Image (cartoon, rainbow, N blue to C red; front, side):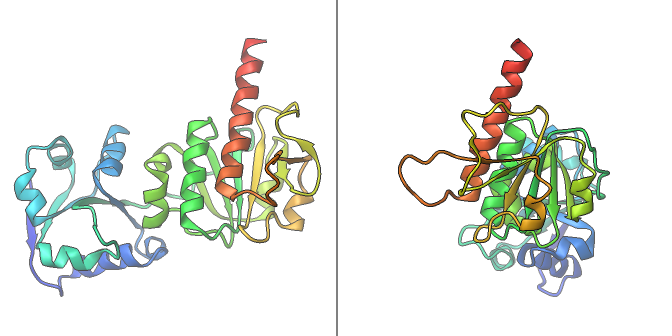
Length: 264
């Protein structure tokens, strides 16, 4: 077990780690992703994946050396133990998690044109993006196509909101409308202004759902590619739903349609 103690703010590894934690798009430059907290680390290990570097706050390392996530992290190429005072300076969170992994950023996967897909159109909020990834994983959608302008999916904020969903999904970032055109499954778009109600509509399986910008919704160019427009019934009278909530409703409806189809 190769354990290295870090006690200097000028340590080069610590500087790179600070950028990963504080700059949501730094992973694109470094080619490395920060996985924060024991829950995400366990989810990563459960996939049979090995971290490049396991990083611990010194007090946590000393108190938890026999915990499963710590023992399994011995598979890492290196283990870094950071002085507590430096650890607290790393994260913008009030209560940062005391451990994390640095792993290689996944290569951009190839588009699978035939699988259930969620298309993210310029989503800006990390919490919304992460929540949609969780719903996609829960309801059987394995491919995410994030159009240019969408929040960085491997940023620490989206990772925390995704709660491990990232590791079971194919995430295609920086996508274009040509990538959407390449899909061979029907594209469905939600609209608050018209279309058949989702709960009444016979949904195609598999399909692709387009989820749009929090304020502007799905762009006209993307909506023009949709085979159908659907709306979510809102008997309470609100004008619109949060995009992550809307995505959960739509993806669940597709999952129900898939289950009903398998029983037919």
